Image 1 (tube, helix red, strand yellow):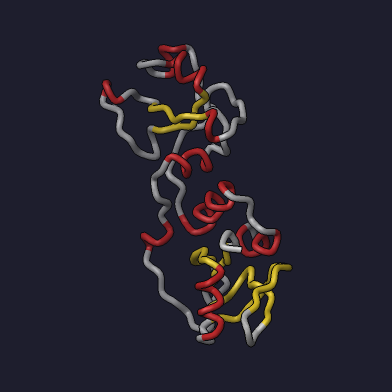
Image 2: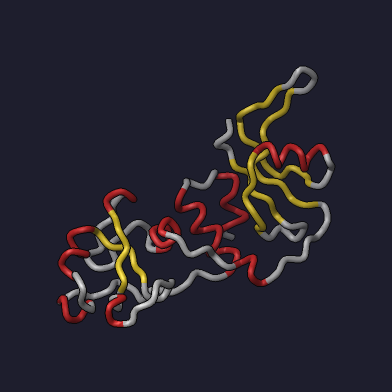
Length: 173
């Protein structure tokens, strides 16, 4: 049960955060949220039995800052952005069959950021080595860029772990 995640929407139905089921239930008992969708799964205590929420909406609007929509730079988020697909050969792979590649090698001044890192399979990474894609005879499928905003942030999160069907109308509307 600890694996269940709950989507929290602002009062305006804008996705804000994904929380644990325990935090969501606590927010329900504090009457901070209303339940919009539920999982089939139930939780029980000595005195109560209820279905686990899947999507909850805050009763009061919460102001959020611009930085809240930025996506953390990490290996798993790079893989999710590139949809677990090598950006040179186009092959789809599992996370343990992938690595990431600096488009402009570090030895040539390339930075470790969203615009210079792409998902890459191990054979293509070896072929590229310490060269640019042009020098190695490789072509990028798409130019890498940082994901921005709430929709892209939640799309990345849900690519890493399959999003429940009940979330789809709130994330991909």
